[in-house]
Amino acid sequence: MSTMLDLIQSAQRGEIPPPPIAQLIGFSLSAIEPGRAMIDFTAEARHANPMGTLHGGVLCDIADAAMGMAWASTLGEGETFTTLELKINFLRPVWTGKLTATGRVVQGGRTVGLLECDVVDDQGRLVAQQRARP
Image (cartoon, rainbow, N blue to C red):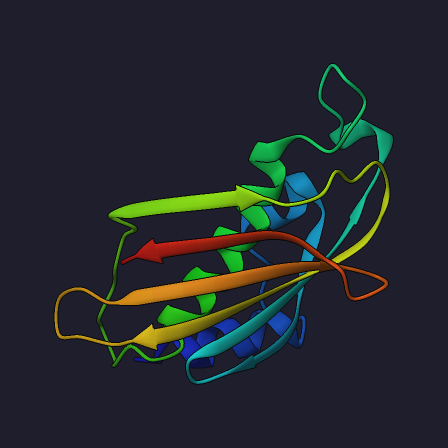
């Protein structure tokens, strides 16, 4: 049996398909190591809310994916998890362009942890910040 990190790395190398949500929204894993993961995403018009800016749910999802993979990368064989709580702060509007979400484990625990994620645009400006408890 493989660890979650092994499975994530297999998907990153294209040996197994990425998660369905990654295909639906259009994000990809650009880096993974124990406790840290980076997601790349290009915001397009198809991701817009009625005002024409990037839908907040999409920002929340790429941040959640980065944090989820960061947490999963620390799990042992046969372990799994789910998110208990998350909070996101939107700091600047996005219409289109490349975004990078970097998820990090802040504090691990046997049953509950704390993660955070910064989402930045292609100029390195902070677009959103999210925290979660798996």
